[in-house]
Length: 200
Length: 254
Image (cartoon, chains in turn brown, cyan):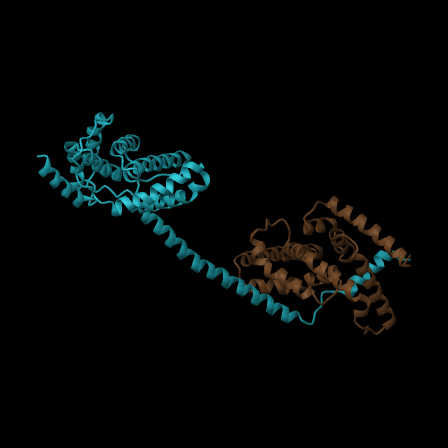
């Protein structure tokens, strides 16, 4: 067998094993196994946390969101129709749970003045790092003005670089709707960035 | 030059990458919360199943032994007594509590009047009397007191019937005990028993009718009417009084 053929076999085997183990994990989660919740947490917490941080635009309250997602997981998975992978399913729970966290974060930022609460830069290239932080910070500020659905679509697509079908599966809407939301989100953000003096 | 949105999105992506110093702490919190959730669910089942089984068993037992019907009847009776005043017409409202109070007086304290010697005039109730007495004689020995009425459901028809029952009884009671007019009272008691042979106050009405017959001097009719009470056809309801009256009537009109 050629090396390409061997590679393909290995890939198929790995995929088969992943599916089996995911199926097993789903079953154990549906049974309410504590070990399964721990295993799901270990596998997916980074994805959930990253999405939460990017959606909410801060680190402080994201731990609450992560906890909420994994506590809700055993009950939610019993109602799951298994149309998506476990990761997509968990991210969809995160998106559903994120709404009130985002709203709270926006309120907090409005009240306290977000720029003042930024963490100090500690990079080897401080100027570049600070510039990046400021840009990220500016984007979060602009995202606060978008409707939640457009915000989610933008973060999943442009920040997390997910495909439209994947976003549609996470959000639970048709792809066309995702694309429409993205179009409006980008247009509004571009206009807002231009007003702030950030241009190509 | 790069699109500012792409640039900003990259900045956001690189700033927030899902890292957290409190990762381990959050994991512990998650597992503790899930454990607590499971314990609550287990406790709910542990309490819920025995409670449901007890309730189901009780209802099944009551249904088998017939106690469920009795309870339901009592409940319906209670509810209908409470709900009727607000639903009924004002004139009927007045009649019901009045008659209820009087019925209590009659069962508890009404003294058996002494036989009177005045010659009673013949009245229109004459043909009805034997029929009523026959009904009374057919009444079972375990006949319940008037307060324990037979099972009724709280339908509008039943409510109207109850009000009619009370109204007729009140009319007869007034003629007998307030106006002390035995002729009118006899007519009224006969009317009550004709319209409500199984009415709430049918037993009282039969006894009071017998008393009226005594007052009117119709001793044979009175004896016939009192006999079922003396024999215990209505349980102990005025049994002693009926026996005493019968003895007295035997002496006067053998």
